[in-house]
Image 1 (tube, rainbow, N blue to C red):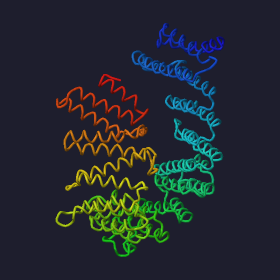
Image 2 (image 1 turned 45 degrees about the horizontal axis):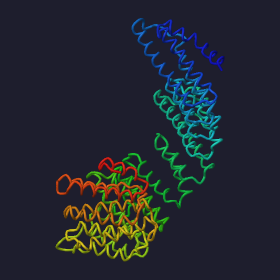
Image 3 (image 1 turned 135 degrees about the vertical axis):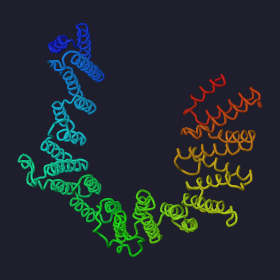
Image 4 (image 1 turned 30 degrees about the vertical axis):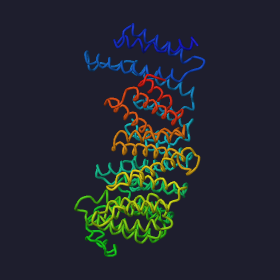
Length: 630
């Protein structure tokens, strides 16, 4: 081992002597460098090598190279700006490469080491070494798609002045032979060809000629230069990708998105859309993709499509001359065709409404687009009206939001929700009942509607949804929330009874003794929020009322020890709020110090029992710190 290390160090002698002769490093510094390198080399040669030793060695050498560059730049600046370098200029970088190569050889399957070496090559512009690293890495990791793409990108876009399209193609073609089912590879191969076609088009336009050099003609293969510029190769790649992955809609959508990023891709995009229409006529996502393309891909042409308004069955309030109007109508035509093709698809209805609402939110801002907004509102309303028999709870909520907030018709929204909660398939949807109650609160007026209507809706919901269903607790929580916030609240006894009922339901739920088999994290969050809200409500009536409430809650929690194994910030906030009450009371002087400490200790003990081992240690530390006891 000693002879191997000495042989490596002997190889460094000419370069270190060069540093000393040029005044970059002094003799003591050279001795320190050699000593440090010797120690590092011995560490690399140990029986059980450590990856950290290699990385630390490489990092130290990188810092040394940075110091060498700074010193040499200073020497050149102070002496002779035309002063040439020496044989040691690339020595330290080569040594780092040597370290990485040995590390990769020792841990052949470690992709992280390879990526660190690649990053170092890019930072130091070691393009020749980078090609070697990629070649070796791809032999070990042939299934890593990202590595193939990165290597091809280096060949074409890397530090080479004139990137090699041939080498990049060869790499991606080899990658596809091994990973033929990779959508990302097919799309990136097409992206490479589009970049090359754009480069040829730009060069042709810049030189204002209809041809390019002979060298480029040789690269153009059977398509010719014009074929390349027109997208012949990406079109061929798309066809081959479809043959390899015929069932993938994502492949087609990714190709469509790629084409939208380059000029002169209209013909290829039409082929992709035809493929989507032919192979995915029953897929809702495919129809939405076609509508999106119709909305965003049109170009401004005042002489085209002046008769688009006629296609809108006469309900368009504008003349259709604006680009946005044309695009919107084209997109709506696609959605109408989709509705005729899939008349009973609830998923398509939901997709259509979200798509049109997105246009309203993102594209139709300002007074200039008011006509387009009116058209879209009419279309969305007509869409929901046609699909009333196929609406589910989620779509009923979306439609009610649209009527209330976009159309400003609360009455229609309330009527819709009333019908939805009467529908057998949506009757047990807690979110619909709560939405209906909130809508009634929004439209109620002291002169017209009774404030008891929202509460009566929630009472009906509690009867409609069985107590064994998860939504039952949500209805009870909404009822309690309304009781605590309404202008004419329920009696204290009624609120407390409802709170106690919800508290026991949630605790039984968490303990698993009976009741609903629901998500424990959600139940714990509901429990913490319930306790905090009711305690804050009680505090409005005074400290004594608040203290009485938290004592009742802790007494109830005592029967469910270690239920709080699910840590939740709301439940922690409840115990902290109890401690804060006692702290404020103690500081105000309304309670003796001994009694305050005793009450705080009971709160800590309750928290420890409830949370079990999860947070017991933390609460004990806090109790010891604050109260000075275990």
